[in-house]
Amino acid sequence: MNFTKSCYWNYTKYAKKNDLSTKGNKHELVRRIAEKKGEIEEGRFYPDYNGDPSSLPGTVANIRKFPIATLKYILKSHALSYCGNKDDLVLRVFLLSHKRVLTYDHTGDDSYCKKDNSGGS
Image (cartoon, rainbow, N blue to C red; front, side, top):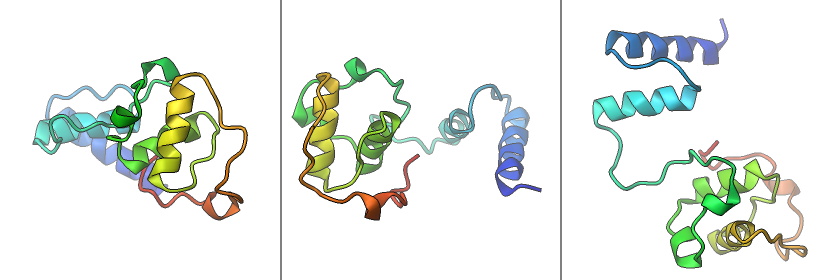
C-alpha cells in the first residue's frame, strides 16, 4: 500500500472518529485535526494561499513576517524561482503582489535548489 494513501486513510479515520469533516485536500484535513487537538498557534500564517497575488500584503514589512517555507510555497505556485535568502524571496513575493516580475535574478543558477528541503509544500 502506498504510504501517502495509508497516512491519508489514518487522517480520515481520526477525523471521522472525532466528528470532523473529511472533505477537501489532505492539508485541509490535517489542519482541521491540528485545530481540534489545539496544536495550531494563534496568529501564525499557514500556506493556504489561494493563488491570487492581490491577496498578498502590499508591504515588504508584512511579507517579511511570512516563514521562508510560505514564501517558497507562494513563489512555486507561480512557477517563480524560490532560491536565495529570505530577502530575495521577500523581494520576489513583493513584486508578485504588485504584478511585477524580477527580470534579472542575481542569485544565479537555480539548479541547486530544484530539490525542495524547506519543509513547505
